[in-house]
Amino acid sequence: MVDMLEQENPGCFDMPDKTFIDLYMKSGLYMTEIIKRLYQSNVLKEQFPEKEERLQHIFEKQVYGLAPTEIIYKIATNYILGFDESNGIGITGYIKDMEQEPNGDFYVDGWEKDYLQLKHYRYIRNQIAHENYAHESDMCSFKDTAWLDEFYQRIIGQIDPLALCYKKTRFHSSQKFTEAKKNSTVQYAPSPSKLSQQGNQLRLWSILLLIVIIFAVLIFFLL
Image (cartoon, rainbow, N blue to C red; front, side, top):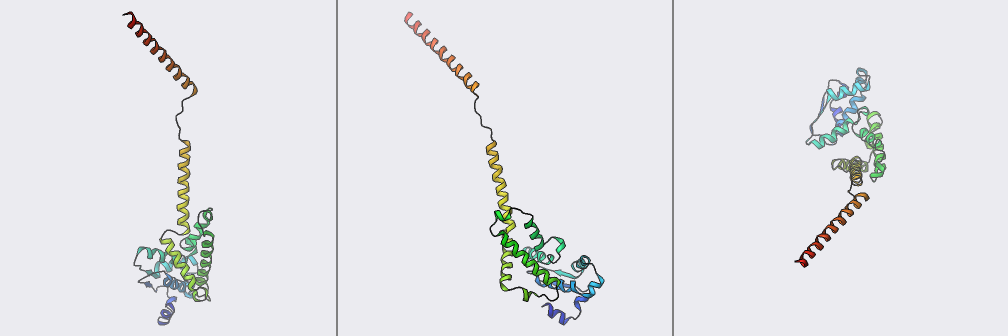
């Protein structure tokens, strides 16, 4: 579709004032391909030799997108912004968050497998975005597309690796707090001296009661 756009509008990706809009974004692939063409344009490279400045110009002045729902908007935005390695958003940000969680593999099954898959797809994305010879049809298969779609569904359903790890570590911390609180609860137990004192008082009352009974019996017989 992007090739057709360029055929119908020759040189459109060499114009720094040319704008593009996707009126119904889904995955963000279409807009990402447009950003890639603009980013690789020799004309834009001459006007914006610094990569960060060129990307900023493209994002702020040339590309726009609309999404039907907030969830689709977030998916598309994360995918598109993942084009920029420096912003820490998208696949790069997700991988960094996984790397900063030392116990992820302990709490979540398949953690390492998902981590390696994400790194693999980031490599493919970078090749497609930055290398002229690379094209997604040569580097990706339907199996790759299916895995990415499934991973996005896991993110939406909050059953992705980071979400699961967060839930389990939070539960583990809460459980440890409950156990610590239970173990630290002070239970009342009378000291030996207090028990002895209570025993002496009981014996004293027993003797007084016995004296009262004897006195009452004597009075009864004397009368």
